[in-house]
Amino acid sequence: MAKDTGNALVTVENVTSDIHIDKNDLLAVAVSKAELHMQQQLANATREIRRLERALKDGTTGLKEKIAQLAAKLAKPGVKALEAAREACGSKARVETNWDMQQEKGTFEVTISIKSNDHYGSANFGTLKGAFDDAAQKLVAQLESDSQKLTDTRETAVDWRKKLAQIPTLERQYRARLAEATLSKTEKGQALLEALGGQFEQDVLALPGI
Image (tube, rainbow, N blue to C red):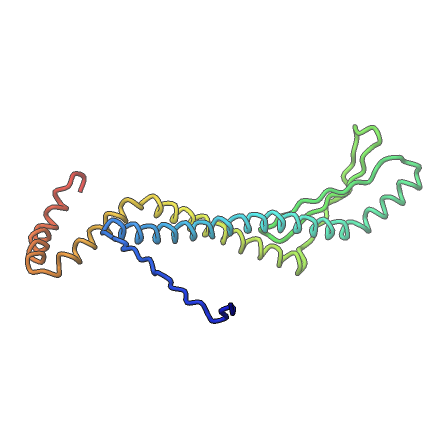
């Protein structure tokens, strides 16, 4: 018997099912979209807060390192002279420098001193004042900018948290909007809306605490 090479006819039965949507489902869609948007905005703000906190930490460390370099450079001639004098008199005391940064004024101070080997005595040979260079000034400006951004972003995050806490209120507003849209399509519905809204201001003023 010859083999049938023709295309087989396949009948595909389409299976359909009715999906019933009521007003509660519509409300769930609207509220969930609003809630998701709020959550995304809060997540974005939280990520930005973390980024700015890292940037401020790294920037502060970088500024201190930069000023330490400037302080060492400024103190170098004085330290060298004191080291030479120390060696000439055979002293075993240590020459030390300490610096203090005044970020808001863009200056720093370096104190040069000699401390005895027994840690009980020290002599201060003077304090030098220096100013931030351009690189340090840029670091300061960036820190100020990031600090303000961090403050603003934290406030933004707080606002989104407050909005998320108002989801029940938002759902009530959506329910009212949906009901109003439905009622407004008929004359009887419009009459009901007018009856409900006629004493609106008086009803609000009558609420406790208003």
